[in-house]
Amino acid sequence: MPSQPSKSLDTFANPSPGRDFQIHIEVPEFTCLCPMTGQPDFALLVIDYIPDQLCVELKSLKLYAWSFRNEGKFHEAVTNEILDDLVRALSPRFMRITAKWYVRGGIFTNVVAEHRQPGWTPQPAVQLQEFAPGSNIRG
Image 1: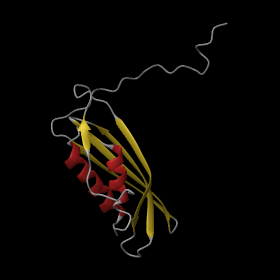
Image 2 (image 1 turned 180 degrees about the horizontal axis):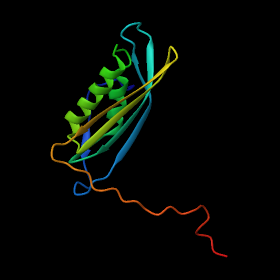
Image 3 (image 1 turned 60 degrees about the vertical axis):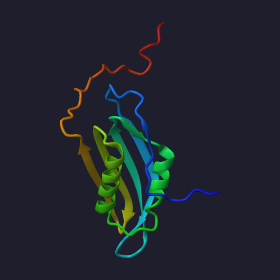
């Protein structure tokens, strides 16, 4: 039986809840409809998050993204709706959704929406030394 679009987001237990780590997901074929014209809008969705207790299961995310295909939504509205739904399902420590909308009428649009769990502060970034290409070759 073929898959069907779904608004359900399945989750699984974070395998390392004691550690902050980043999950980076790209959804390159996101589509919805322009609410003004009914024409399709295409976007690359970039989802970056630091999980707390739960992670999103990727097949359910794929079917969730597919569920917007026939819905008329402004770029700003659909980006924030996706963030709200993912935050509701996962309660992440941090999440950022970047929607990079493809050109329409000569205009590109990027929409970025973020969530931070109350009281969570990120660990300081560690700057590692950069090594030149080939620097590990001896001789």
